[in-house]
Image (tube, each protein chain N blue to C red):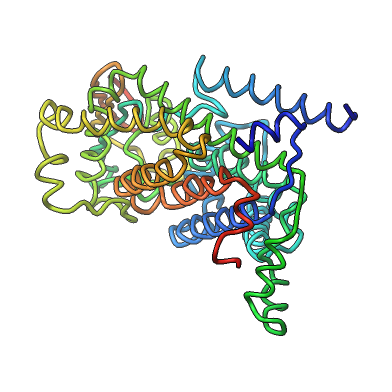
Length: 111
Length: 309
């Protein structure tokens, strides 16, 4: 077996092991494919200081319904720091643990 | 089976370059489609300082700084890479540029279809036969010598290095098996709740969305989407079970020559159904996955495809 061939076999075996580990065990990462397998939804009913509705669909890359608690806090921080908007209202998050409604006041999650 | 012979001979097999060159075209078209609709949705401005996409990226990856200028350099490079891959100019380099872009894109927009396209581009870059057929030279030569003559000559070429082709086949097989396993282990998917929640929430928010992703027919909305959760999830359950069964069976069926045509048919139908759920976004993914079926065809047989005779 030539060196080049040995290198290719090493790449092949390494990839197979990586694919097995990522594909079937542990949290999602590269080579993990759990498409559509989790319930995820975020319904925002937020207004700015003037009472105008805030539409998050204008800011996110894709029209995904899912936004977790970290992403929600990040979005509220973006509204405060970049847009100067301090949101108020409610956000309903749905994930595998169930549904929770969060209250937002002055740009922060308060409960 | 040809792929077993190729593995036994350390990734060597007297192969026609047609399957991998056709797949090169498919990946390039899928990338151009994706870039096109994202450009229409404002992707050129996603890393502007006032953009939420950029804000979120900086907070999630403070140690991986790509600023607005770097983003636009990569943005232009991705278009050039996709165009070069399509016409077969420095195709290995073009595939590598696309892979770098897709892996970067995963840093600010983690989507599984992006990961699949990125890995396809990365593995394509390992093929020395990418410019052996169906390139800009094919068009130029066809003007003087006739298209059928040129295609026949390209089909008759032999490139015995199938390492990249086998890597791409491995990727598709692993993607389906992993997807089936993860879905099977998910009570939300198997109950139909995940599919119902996804479609129902996208449909409910459709008027708020600046760029819509869904256009469900009224009959489907009445029956599957705009219904109470327990009803919706019960009605989506057969689709969920069928998806897992198909995804688990497809890799085996693709690898066995006798069942390959059936696998192609059912795989194409399954991806058509996926694409109906997300008609814009899943087109590139469906193109690439169904296009990867070409790679499972015995490359010796591929040289005899009637279109190239």
